[in-house]
Image (cartoon, rainbow, N blue to C red):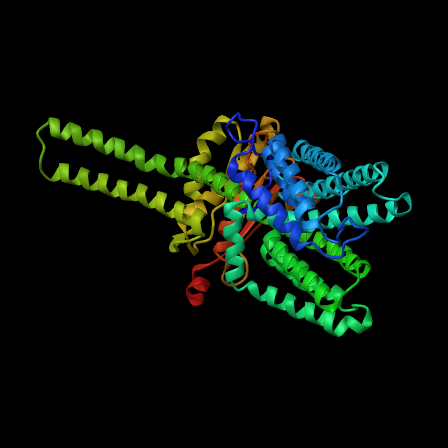
Length: 538
């Protein structure tokens, strides 16, 4: 159900005992009796078949969580409810047999839920929700059919009334399970209970107040018009589900259900009318649950994607750091060895202090590299400084000259006009390195005589400069232009597909743009504001 979702998954305690713990047994007995008593309205045919039966939902949850160990206490709870709440006129042998039969039927439903849903839970995603609804509807149908058939064969239910009783019994069970089971599942889990508590005490509780108002409208105003305003109840359900996911939908639907039961008693609604309303609530509930599960699933996937992006960005950061730290670390090593030599020679004057100052400077440079890349990948922070475009293009191209020579690639750098930018040097170099690395990889696929990479820059109007990086590779198809800059889209077998996505993010953070052009060779262009425009904009 999202990052803080309730997942009613198979749960087996570590103990190997075949009996349910006394706390769980007591909770099942008391909870079942309380729910059966709360739904004790409109008894039919002396069997107290009600339009809404939430007690089986609690039994199913215990069976899903504890397996067959919950069957005996559930059978006892059913027997106690029949004797105390319903006061059914059945012989004890028949009552015991029916209780065992119903418990066994619910156990089969729970077993199917466990096998079908596995560890993901019933309310974790849309597929789980659909499977839960399907199994609950079919399972309660078969269980009610066997229950009514047993009563009919025992002679306690005339055949002429069996079909009507079966329909009411099944609808009561399915309505109770579908409406009550998500709420009960959340109440049985500590984290979900805390989330419900926050919703009740937070601003989203206003949707519950609106639900009460709409209930009054539906029953008081709509009493004489066949409840024509009742579908308006979908509005607060949909609002809560969209805002707070399944938890919001569960709370709003539970309030709606309670309001219908209270209003039914106060207005003296018939059993048939109340059953119609319950079926309508099921439709509203399933719609709300579906919206809530979709919202939770989207939030969970978004959180997982963000985590994946952070990890992938860390990989890009590590690659950038390896490039940027290579030079200062190499210098540090050289200066440290020089210091050792000077100390061995007994030097303690100006020459030693000069080398130590250089060590401090290179150490600070390395620290700045780490800090600035970390700030960008965390918050997108840029540290603007005045840099000459010609210098930074020459510096980056020089780093690839050895690789280009080794791969027989002609690396051409056209002189740029003497213009300055306001940019984060480190981040801008990361972008240029990504583009040049991609260009060299594309060019190396051509025959040696056709391997070329060209870097050029020209001013575009007042205050902007366009840097173009071209290669003699196969180019980019028009239908692939935008996909290139999507996260995790990569044409490389070992690529993460984040280099271009991060590069575009960096350029856009500088107020520029980065794109590819469809051509018979590779063409990438980036546009950045020149120094004058940046100054005026600050």
